[in-house]
Image (tube, rainbow, N blue to C red; front, side):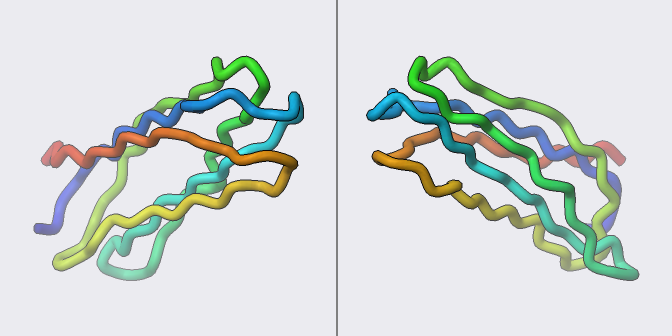
Length: 94
């Protein structure tokens, strides 16, 4: 349904980095406002060896009829595995 929405997001590092190097995860949200495709700038979670990193926020958007709000993530290469949790919801505001 077309209208105003707020995208709420929260992402956190869910495992310690090993070895103790840093990396990052970038998130980008996409939607169409009925005229053109829109996208956020990169939202970056910096992964560290302490597992204390998180980002959160709210993004107001206007979505056109039949528009899916999507996101993708990109884990920046660094030694060892990276794990994170992400929670996203969209709330219609008008």
